[in-house]
Amino acid sequence: MTKDLDKPARTGGGPGHVAIIMDGNGRWAQSRGRPRLFGHHAGARRVREIVSACPDLGVKYLTIFAFSTENWKRTQSEVAGLMSLFRRYIMKEMQAFVKENVRVRFIGDRPRLDKKLRGLMDEAEAMTSGCTGTNLTIALNYGGRDEVSRATKRLAQDVAAGRLDPEKVDEETLPKYLDTCVLPDPDLVIRTSGEARISNFLLWQSAYAEYEFIDTLWPDFTAEKFDELLSHYGTRDRRFGAVSA
Image (cartoon, rainbow, N blue to C red):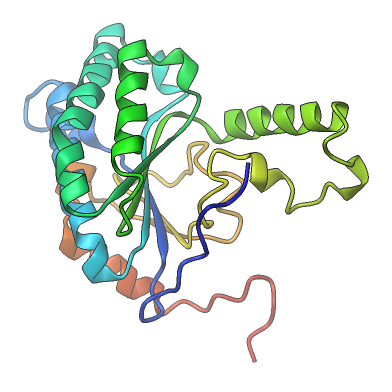
């Protein structure tokens, strides 16, 4: 695997790559006396607003956590409803993303997903491959530990086949085998809904990311709130292990 993108230039000191753990859809729906899937549909609509806001906010890369490898533990009806939502979302939104110059990618372990959904994911990536605006990455059946495990397996296969010298393996090697090999690492990770954990999301990539844990439930997360968090990011002292001058 090789990188096909350069690291993004940051605009006005803000984050070039933002990753979001979109949490709270179910609680948002239940607080309104509605089924959990009602909240997931509301959350899907919110994604469009945030993606559309990215160019004006200087965010070149946006990665969203849609479905984790652990989410299969939810009820069969909720999982089935989510899979149906993903299929409808891709079919509905892709033309709009092409029009808005949004390039779409998916990360995660695809084989467990149904054939129709995988086909739509492939089609969406192909349709938007020429887009040069916002890079939207959707983590679907994704888990950070699973990603590292799959990457390590591919790396080991290359070593066994003589394509990779084990003596030259370093911390720059593994990222070339990750699902995110064509993406820069996230600068800022946001989690909505008041939970303060990273839930197995972008474990390797977020080693030096800044984090924001906010109480807002995802369906209530607005472009204005997004802008506020990006402004707050600009006040942070990013030292990457060094000492401020």
